[in-house]
Image 1 (cartoon, rainbow, N blue to C red):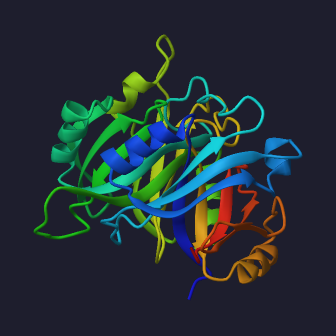
Image 2: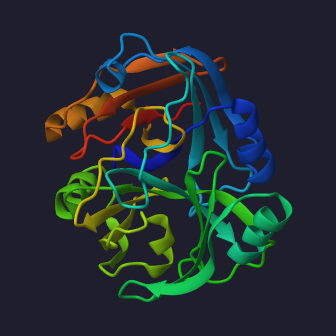
Length: 314
């Protein structure tokens, strides 16, 4: 059994937790509150370059979570310094840094229309259908924005689930996408952490994303792959050609900004990372979040993304 159990959650920076609750809980259905913590967030000294980071962190799960939508969302509101850092300037899709959080759905178009037409959510890409990979796996996708213009994707993997008689619904996080410098280095790295099932690979520019890029600049090439693990949500590394800006931004910036990989035994995970020669940003951190403890540490991936290991005991 693998030590690592896929993406446990997508971390999303917010500037106002009340606004974020209305969006993620009331509009998107992430109503399961695992914890709501306010206070110091230790173990970030190397990442934030500050001695003390303070934030409100709320971990939410979806009421309809399934195998293709297993991931949670972690809402983070920075309370130190000047508050929530801004969304990285110039980000389109595939620059180094978190590009999106993707939610698995049933009946993508119906959910998209409800959100955009009836709940005032901003559309970023109208629903479309495609077939990807050697197996030509069918899917429906759409994109919309969170309150701070972070990208949220809806995806219905019709080709992975054969037929399910169910009403339209969101289920949970399917994957996180992030830009990288070197696709092979990144995929080799994350295969060590259990992301071994490649769902698709594409080297063609995805035309509907063209409006996201800066006007007056030639569109980049796209290299995308999607990897799932035995449990948890997946990862979608993206490599632009030519490489564009570093858009990681500051930890806690509004919009998608980090993700956590779940484990059952965080001490065992530390031993495994040391065996693999992977550098950690801190020792194991333990937050008292009320009914349980939130255990985590951040480690260094090939692009120094904001990625953590979390023990999923909450």
